[in-house]
Image 1 (tube, one colour):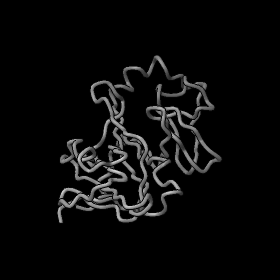
Image 2 (cartoon, rainbow, N blue to C red):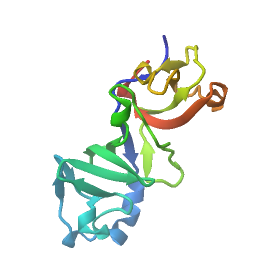
Image 3 (cartoon, rainbow, N blue to C red):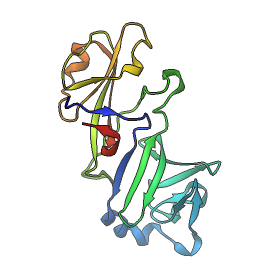
Length: 198
């Protein structure tokens, strides 16, 4: 079967930080004399990132990170929390996962994403890498989808009666599926390629 399914529920993705945006604004925002590198959750934090506790002059606007009990590093994107799982300063990438993806009420194996993440590629400092692709998740559908482009999230079945949840392969979702199969919720999100199965 040539369908895409999720492995695990953290739904990690890798995002490319565009270098030209940083160097253009380097002089305007960064004052290295008053800033020092930091560590949180085992990750080194330096320009263009900055800890919220150190002030906005220590990094690029929008790349402030919150360190929670030195156990989690959080990046805020579109007013939502994403856990930072890795930063590669040489490749200019940051790996993040949705902090809400594994809500307890849905149980293990039932990835529950609550936010669509769409990026304005023309103006954003944040871009998806070639390793990422978008998936569409349909939750609590009243009608079963029996098609090769949809993979049932069997761990989600039965949470709300006789309803089904599905992951749709990248590039095949039209939006009509949610209406046609009477789904309660639709979420589109990028996922790092190594966490999918073709």
